[in-house]
Length: 153
Length: 242
Image (cartoon, rainbow over all chains, first blue to last red; front, side):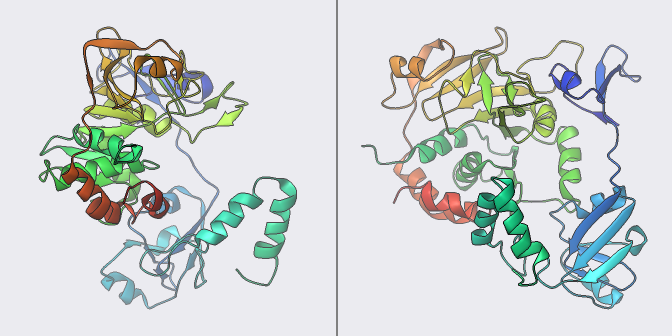
């Protein structure tokens, strides 16, 4: 798809999959094209979800777009509710269940990041993550403690 | 010792770039312009339409960042703000990394969004809270956002100013270079030359940057700080004077 800008930068050199063509509508202009990103799997976290896969997503995030682009979409949700409740929700964006492969209820599932209106980011935990991510050994420890372990956050 | 912080001075300088009635947007990792735009909005530009990425009160889109980018590409923004890991005298920005982009010695956050916004916004004010020869280099290692472009590329806007802790540059479109238009209070040409990786060129009409007024400082330390804390809580703790 076409993307404005870029032409005249080094992007055509550092990203060979980006192409520059003559604009077919205004042939005296060059324009950059980029291939669409097609993820195999998307993981998104919803404010709420229904059993049929319909999601209520934060309208400030790009989760709906990500889900529509991906082949398999696994959604975690703060809570599972009847689909009518999602359609009446005053906040958020509804994504239809046709885009969603599976749903799982995980309250607090965005931790250590935030869910707007529900809980804040866990700054202390994020600092621990940043420190741990500096080398492989400490990161493996982090994963053992918080991801593979059963202690919870 | 002056009665304001460097961040407050930069915010006041940026605020003066905002004209009343304009549609102005601030992207991610940009607390200094967020403060400047909010200061303008609360003082001389009450009719400005303000967009701040990731801010719950200044995000007039329902369709994620796609809607924001579509709006930008349509030419919706009169003024936008960008920064660079490296910035050179031709207004080129490098947001990829230091050294060979395939194996960077230092990795920057990435520049594909900036490579578009530098062209489609009416004016872009470049900001950087660090002014050193590492940042202001003779030639960026990789150009992710060029200051100027060949004539067969559609470009609505481009760099207008560069605001740093030491000075304000204006982008001279004819000469395609940055020219110092004002030095901040207490900064002289010797210091600027020492802390800039290229010999700075000066406007003949160079001035001293006006200090923030008492009213601006009051607004910055109350309503602006409060609003910015919703997106940048840590920044709001240290950037402002008392």
